[in-house]
Length: 389
Image (tube, rainbow, N blue to C red; front, side, top):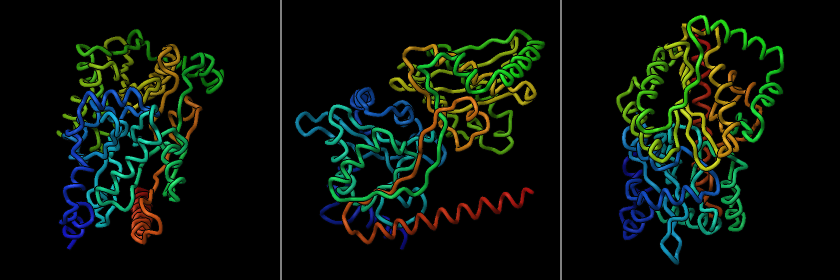
């Protein structure tokens, strides 16, 4: 019954099937040159929806494979002006209702790519593509609620008499990289905390001269990535079984994605070393004038020296000194204990339910199912916390 409902919802077996199939296509059907050109013109940066990254995720990342796309083309020139990677509500959460959900790109940002030269047309055509694919609603996860992409979508929805619903939201840390790095850190942390961190760094130097390295070139980024992967797996993520290298598909994805983005100067691996020993490393994506702090790995044997914080201080100085970068998204969870005290910028991230037709009762069913899912997840999280006490 579930399979029948899923097929009827997203791939209707009727004369409309061909149109639905054309409206929603495999990610690999998007011409890479068009995708890259759209990313350069995107009204809002999103490093996780760059082709080199998202194609690698969809090809092998654990639980995130075989994503499809809603493309929008300029009617006059067939130029790609919008792109929204998606999956079905059934594949996302086993809910057999006719809705499409943001394809999760491993990073916590799913704002679609919308052409800044034709934003209203692009947003209008993306929503129409979703309708043609048989969807009654879109669920956009982890979008910047006040970002340019969501603002444009809201304008189109308002024009069409449609009202989106925010399902959940939180505030995330960001960096204003237009400031002087030293001034920013002093104002964020205060003289006393910075003095303590300098003391820890001096203690770390007892293990060798401390150096901050940035790997960008394709020939140097591969070894730097392997260092990161080993550091990540050596810590609590490895103990929990969530380190990238612990899943073959995830390891394949990150190696492919980092190599692809290095070719376009859109990824770098930052590493902090004490002598020859790597004590912390992180992956940073770059899209337009924004950086995205993807992941951090540390050697927990050096935990008393705060290696993750020390790396983040150096990364902050590095980004603030780069005239090509205006801001950085931490892509971290709410109230993140490490990044929040350092990066004091804030913006809202949320999950949004977008109805595609007015007064559609199916949208209410989708909304109810998602609310129930959130309640179940929160109950499970509370149970886990109680068991750990």
